[in-house]
Length: 147
Ligand code: MN
Image 1 (cartoon, rainbow, N blue to C red):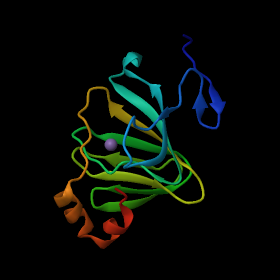
Image 2: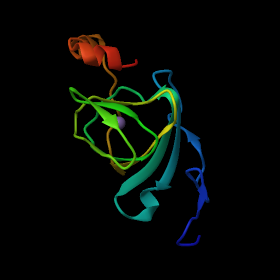
Image 3: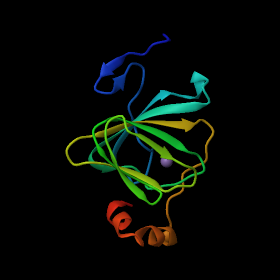
């Protein structure tokens, strides 16, 4: 394979399949995934491009591994811990270990973002009833989250 895989336009790349965000589940909506750099790139981390359709959202989850996120297109909002942040193109978002997080696209346009993650990582955990009660104790978070 060539050292370069061309950008084909519209956030699609050569030799880079467009996949469902996750293989199963209903706790997310309208999200696609492309693995831009996988373990075989030899960097020790993976770089993925996710795109959330207007009105869609990622899974509300937490895990031991961290995420480094770069917003690539569109706008939206994210819950990171107890903070809800507005997202605009090229904003940077750090998700520390063990931190609840969820991204939501706005209603007008998709939200596309690059997400850097370690190759070796634990499985995400979803909130149980107690976790949800703790999260929903804050009104803004209760309004924001989708489960
Ligand atoms: Mn995550």
